[in-house]
Image (tube, rainbow, N blue to C red; front, side, top):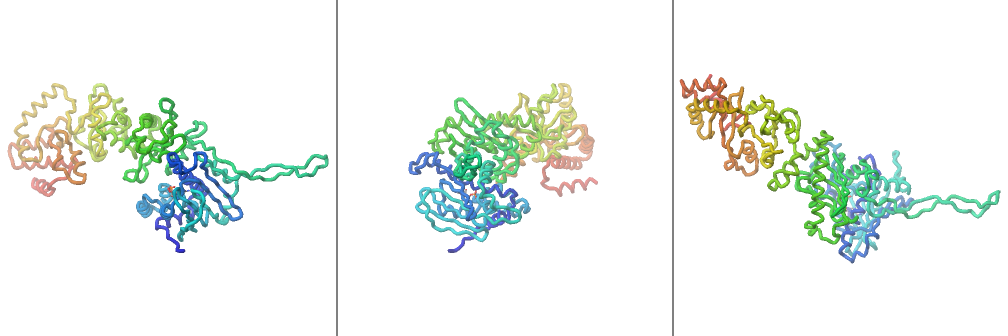
Amino acid sequence: MAKKQFKAESKRLLNLMINSIYTHKEIFLREIISNASDAIDKLCYISLTDDKVGLSRSDFRILIKADKENGTLTVSDNGIGMTAEELESNLGIIARSGSSDFKKETDEKAPDADIDIIGQFGVGFYSAFMVSDKVTVITKAYGAAAGYKWESSGADGYTITEYEKDFVGTDVIMHLKPDADGETYGDYLESFRIKQLVKKYSDYIRHPIITDVEKSETRETGEKDEKGNPKTEFYTVSEEQTVNSMIPLWHRSKTEATDEECISFYKEQFRDFEDPVCVIRVNAEGAVSYKAMLFIPEKAPYDYFTREYEAGLRLYCGGVMIMEKCADLIPDCFRFVRGVTDSPDLSLNISREMLQHDRQLKVIANSLEKKIKSELLKLMENEPDKYESFYKNFGIQLKYGVVSEFGAKKELLKDLIMFNSSKENELIPLSEYVKKMPEEQKFIYYVCAESVRHAEKLPQTEQVRERGYEILYLTEDVDEFVIQTLNNYESKAFCNISVDDLGLETEDEKKESEEKEKEAAGLLDFVKESLGDEVSVVRLSRKLKNRPVYLATEGGVTLEMEKYFKSLPGDRSDEIKATRVLEINGDHSAFRSLKAAYENDKEKAAKLSKILLSQAQLIAGLSLDDPSEYTEIVCSLF
Ligand code: ADP
C-alpha cells in the first residue's frame, strides 16, 4: 500500500513534535482527550435532534487503556468519528484554515518562534508523536458504512485503510517510544500516572474519562499465624473508574477554581501563550440564569485583524456544547473577548440559526456586555499598566466600536477609550482629562497629527499650551471620527485646535483682533490673490504666538480626514477635500517683512506669500505640489 506524504507544513511540525520542543511532553494526553471530548460534543449535539444516534447524554465516555505488554496507550471515544476524507484532511495536514499563513509565519520568524505558532494553530493531535514512535487511529464516522485505520510512524508519511469497527467513535492508539535519555515513556502506562495527568489537565472535561485504576486490597491466604488468626496478604486489583470530576471550571466557585487554574484553562483552550489581562466570572441568577467565564487577552492573536478570525463565546446549554463560537453573545466592539457561557435556560432543541433571535440569549448578551465594560474600567483604575498594554492592542477596536453603527455603542465605550496627553506623556481616558480641567476651561482641546512628536510641534497649539491647558493628541485615522461621534464628554464640548475657535479671547481682545484684521485687509486680499485656489481664505491668526503661519481648515472636512480618505483604495481626494485657510501671525517679523514688501515690491510680496503657504503646508504634514518651484522662489530671494 502506498504511503501518503504529509503536506510540507505538517512535516515540518511533525519533526518539531518528534524532536519535542515542548518541555512538558505529558500534555499529549490532554490534547488527545480534548479531541475526544470535542468529538463527543459534536455527536451529543446531533443526538438532541436525531434519534438514530441511539445514545443518550450519559452514554458518552472517553476510555483510556494501557497495555503494558504491547507498550500502547489507547484513548477511545464514542464521539462523531471521522470519514476517510476527514482522516485525510484532519490528520494529513495541519492548520487547515491557515496553512499558508502558518508557512509564511514560520518562514518569517526565528526558529525559536515555533512554539508560538504551534500554540496558535492548535495541532494537538500531532503531540502524540512526542511520546510515540507510531500512532494508529481507528475510527468510524457517524452515519458511515465503514470504518478506517490511519497509521503513521512519523514524518515519512501515513496510510489509510478500510477497517472493521463496530461502533461509531475513534480509538487513538499510541505506541510509546522505548525509554531513552532519561525519558521514561513507560510511565504513561502506569495507572497512577494516567490518573494524575487527567486530574491535572483534563479534570473539567464534561464527559467521564474512565480508566483502570489499580488499588491494593487485602485478602485472607487461608493459612493461620502463630496466634491462630487468619493470615492476610496484599494484592492489586484493577477496576474501571471515572477519574475526572466532570465539573467544568465555570461551575466552580472562586475557592474551588483558582485564578491560576482558570488562566491555564484559557491558555489551553484558546491557544494563547500569554496570561489574559483579566478573568471575568459571572454567576447570574434571575430571569435567565447563566454562568460565564470570560477572558480578556493581552495581545491580539495573529489573525485578529483578518477575516479568518472568528469572534464569539463557546456556548453550553446544561452541559451540552451548542456552539463553538456564538458571535451573538458578544458585541463586535468586544470581539477580542474569549470564554464560555453556560445556561440551562436556553432551549436545547433550538437550531443555530434560530438561536440568534432567542430572547434569553439577548438577555445574556446584554448583561455580559455591561460586565465586560465594568471589568475593563476596574482594570483601568486598579492596574493601569495592564490596561494600557491591553489598550495598545485592542484600543483601535474600541474606537471603531464608537463610530460604527452610527455611534450605537458610544455610551458603552466612551469611558474606555484613551488618547495621548500633552501633559502626561502617556495615554489617558477622557474622564481623567475632564477631572483635571481648571474651572474656567471651556473645552476639551485636541489636535490631530501623524504622531505625538509632530503634534507637540504644531504652531496652532501655542495659545492653549501657554494657558497650561492639556491637549489630547489624536494620532490614529479613526480618532477624529470618534470625537465627532461622541460630540461631547460629560457635557464638555470638544475643540479641534486646528479648526475651531479656541474660545480664549476676552471681548476686548476680540475687538482688537477684528481691528487688526480690518487694517490688514488689503494685504490679506493680496496674499489670497497671489495664492489663487490653493487657499480659500487668508486671515490673521488668533492662535499663534511665536510662529509665523499655520494651515487651518473650514467646514466638516479636516486635513487629517482628507489624508485618511486619500489613503483609501480608489482615491477620492477630489471629492473629499478640506477647505484650506492660511492663518498668519500678525505680530511676527515675517508678517512685517511681507507688509513692507507689499508696500514697496509687489513681486517680492507674492513670492513671500507662496513661501508662507508652503511652510504652512509642510508643518501640517502635507507634501508640496511643486517642491522645485518652492526652492526656486526661496533661492531667488537670496
Ligand atoms: P484541533 O483539535 O485543534 O483542531 P488536532 O490536530 O488536534 O487540532 O485535530 C485535528 C482535527 O482532527 C480535529 O479538528 C478533528 O476534526 C479531528 N479529530 C482529532 N481527533 C479526533 C477524534 N478523536 N474524533 C473525531 N475527530 C477527531
